[in-house]
Image (cartoon, rainbow, N blue to C red; front, side, top):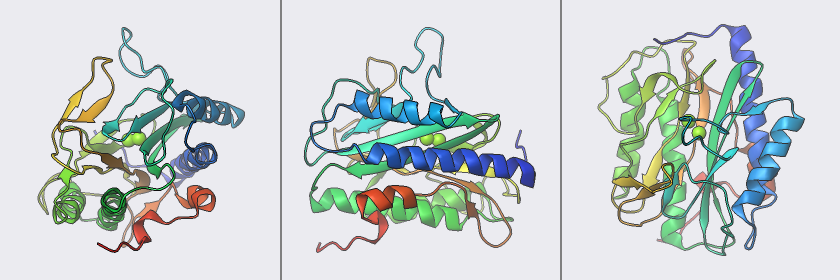
Length: 270
Ligand code: MG
Ligand code: MG
């Protein structure tokens, strides 16, 4: 069942999405070679609690194997759902950080892949293409279009470059739950799937691999990695379907104030 949100609800979702965005920027201040991913998780958890919210991922999942972190931190060939821990970031790594909060009953959910120090051009092209595909997908999230229009825009842009579009994990509706209907795959045909209506709130989140689209789950029961060990990128925004243009509730602006780069606009030689 898809829930259309009132403007009052959208305002609460905007506040949750903005808190997630600011949390990712706080984390960005600490991203450098030598930092443990557990440290980044602590920074996020402290910041979320200081802002009278709850880390939505902590304890998520089954009772026998709840997710232990406040962030999902996925390095290099890890696609999503990486568990924060003792790993120390290294120069040239990429690190995908996914953050979810619940504040006053409404969820925010956003992800960003960071570069640790300098990175090779092939990896930078993956990051740039993935972020561009997110915005191309968002461009399609307007009243009267379908979910397939979003999916197709993401898929075409990334496959044109020869990148693998992850199929096993998808974007989703968002609101009073972290995951609501509809599912928003990153692959699909134009004009197919659920019809988009003004007031629908979605988390759009391309997960794109340098190599094959195939993924597998590690023994920890959470961490998803690429099947071929190639690197993977992940960017996620929360949006409201509107007439004419989607409204983006989350933002990467606070991150960009810290990192001083616009990933989707970087110039590459290749
Ligand atoms: Mg997320
Ligand atoms: Mg999500």
